[in-house]
Amino acid sequence: MYEISEIIRCENISKTFIVKKGFFEEPLKIQALKNVNLNINRDEIVGLVGESGSGKSTLAKIILKLLKPDSGRLFFLNSDITNASEKDLSSFRKNIQVIFQDPMASLNPRRRIIDSVSEPLFLQKSPKVSEGLERCERMLLKVGIESKEFYKFPHELSGGQRQRVNIARALVTEPLFIVADEPVSSLDVSIQAEIINLLIDLKRELSFSMLFISHDLRVVRHLSDRVYVIFKGEIVEEGLPTNVFSSPAHPYTKSLLENLFEV
Ligand SMILES: Nc1ncnc2c1ncn2[C@@H]1O[C@H](COP(=O)(O)OP(=O)(O)O)[C@@H](O)[C@H]1O
Ligand SMILES: [Mg+2]
Image (cartoon, rainbow, N blue to C red; front, side, top):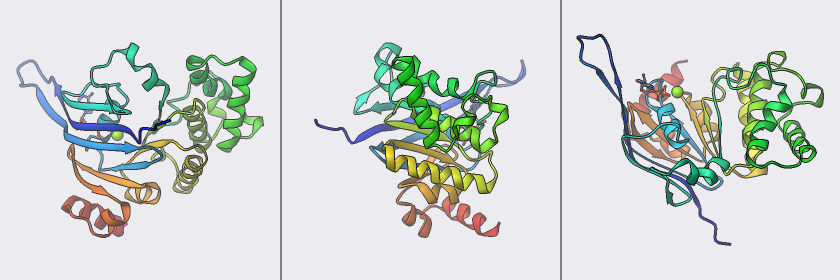
């Protein structure tokens, strides 16, 4: 069968937030994204790096179709889904999952681990319960959660373990594509490396595409096949990590690199 190689494409995406202040004050306009072009291919890990407030999460939400852009187009497997209705998005929703920064906030505190992981599977695919549970257990073991933890609650696990559970939850439906928005930023540095290496191993084994978002250049450089640098809502650089970081073209990328060597 003919396989489409491009999973996601953003074309000229712009987004301005209008923040109403006091009654007598002019509303504040924040241009979060300016003409952003970005694409993610099959089996590719694309890094998006930029400082806090540069528009990374806004772009993630637009790609996840949780937020509408003011202008520009979004494509999934070469189909324009910018204005698609929820009904037409079922294949998209099945094939896209997300991992957020705070592993505690994204798990239901009153649900056992195994139930949180099985939720997207049963929502989407309605497999037989026994088959579904088996799949969840296999995925939990794959991400490094032992079977004695399966029936625990999120607060009984460490931050790193909780993020492993979130990764299992994102991958259990075998999506084509995942968005990971600062997935390691709330974790200790030693745990960050474990989670990054886990993502690299899982990607090799299960083959999916990923948009990996971080403000930390080191993390992005380590795992990305290709990177985009975003600065004040604009993509200022794109390319292979070795090229972007060994000979940055944009002053902002240079300053990101300089800051890195100061710490
Ligand atoms: N819902 C919102 N309402 C108003 N302003 C927002 C909203 N979401 C984000 N912003 C603003 O848009 C800019 C980009 O934010 P964000 O995409 O969260 O950046 P990042 O994820 O890179 O830290 C920031 O100035 C932020 O304050
Ligand atoms: Mg963010």
